Length: 176
Image (cartoon, rainbow, N blue to C red; front, side, top):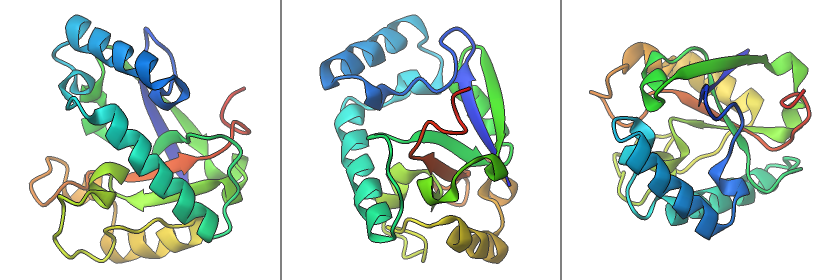
């Protein structure tokens, strides 16, 4: 399985707001909003940093329940397969492709769709993959059942899921 990580060429890959203090993260988000107002990242709500930290705590808790190994506090974010929509998130987008064969799968979790709407109290459509985190073996079954969201929902017409999000809880296999 191929995982894609999209990023802005000017800042580089695997730069995570959650690796910063809350104050530093908020300041960086304000800078992005001022300097790159047309990017998706600049359109995030004011509560984004607090929301992100809350959702990451849910991801950590649920992954631990499944026996997942957490080697870093915040995951690296990737998606399964190519997702052209994510290119619009960055002013000068690039991507890295990582094969799951190069990762310790006990350090990788998944949500069917972005983790924010997956665990948001505002999304209550009853879909079976809401409020759920998956292991590698589990997400394979979900993808077999539903396909990749970027194939059936590229413009978001059918809900918030536009990709399958992968959370890599380790630097091993990521940072070379």
